[in-house]
Amino acid sequence: MSNAVVTGIGIIASNGANKEHFFETIINGQTGLKKSGIFDELHIKSTSIAGEVDEAYLTYQDQIGIEEKSILMAYQAIDEALHDSKINKSEIENLGMKCGLSVSTSISGNLNTMKHIKSKHNNTNTNPEWLVNVPNYTRKVARFCKVSGATYTTVSACAAGTAGVGIAIDQIRNGNLDVVLVVGMDMLADISVAGFHSLESMSVNGCSPFDKNRDGTSLGEGAAAFIVESKEHAMMRNAHIYGELLGYGLSNDAYHITSPDPEGSGAIRAMNMALKEAQLTPQDIDYINVHGTATELNDVMEAKAITDLMEVASPDVLISSTKAVTGHCLGAAGSVEMAVILMALDRNIVPLTAKLVNVANEFGELKLVHGKSIEKEIKYAMSNSFAFSGNAASVIVGKFN
Image 1 (cartoon, rainbow, N blue to C red):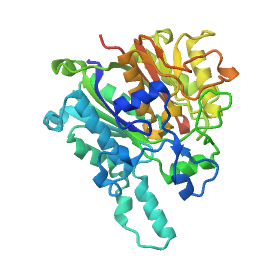
Image 2 (cartoon, one colour):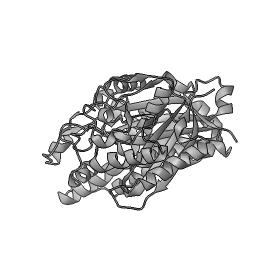
Image 3 (cartoon, helix red, strand yellow):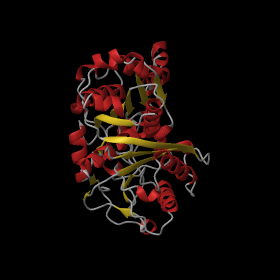
Image 4 (cartoon, one colour):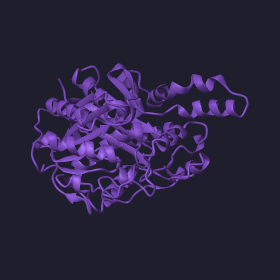
């Protein structure tokens, strides 16, 4: 059994066109949230703030309007991850059945659905291929990467990105694959914006997790890609290893379609499973990048779950949410935050929670990083993704020795 390691990272989000730009804004708390025109198009007046990726960030300018934005962002992130890992598509192709793909999303393909609905509403011609092509994004990504091995698609709401990493861990450990391309992608779309608006859960001025004045989340978009390899395969190539994927956990609290179990049952089970797989105790974790959506219910639930997990009054683990910088990227959130913990671990710096000014009283027991990022050696980091319909996922990364 071989452990899985990460040798390449690629990312595009509202706060960065590549991994270096992205991480610089993360550790400096420079938000990518800004006014987005999608709210005006939908006649939504309650807010206009979102983490929208500027078209100037997109490499594949010639395909804007032809391909869905989530696909273009995925292509760009994959290109960067491959370059970062010093592996090319010809080598991916030559690996044949020993290289696989794990794609995570929540709403990719939705653009075609909306085109169909709007055409019906306006009594204009529709194209049946719009609906036929809704689930085509995984095929397109596989063809782009030249992957011919096992291909997986994870759509477990906002836990999808983290769950998709778990697939790669299993495939490497079981010896089925030597390399897995992992990518999470989602774009701002009518359905998600309208849905969160109907829930009255979006912030007016931009989300501020754990702050006493927080008033909801802010939607974002982006894509993050990783080259995951068996440790032996990576060492044979003398590749730079960002971290070792030690364990993951998945659960479902089956509590409510949008609200988490206030007791944090699903979150605790997911974190415990990840710790058991990694053969670690809660006190071994140095840093947790929390789901931290800045909604009333999520922040309280996650804080309770972590303190209950630690079983101590003041857990030593450092905690931050990076959604005040990136926005909530839905199915790509876990992927975006996976990039955060990998780079934090690789560079020994714990990112701050941007926009956190006044910590709410109920979070006083947590060591929330705010004000500025902290330089500190990180041996083990965890990323949490707690989603609608009770989906929960956690992953643990360790420093490679």
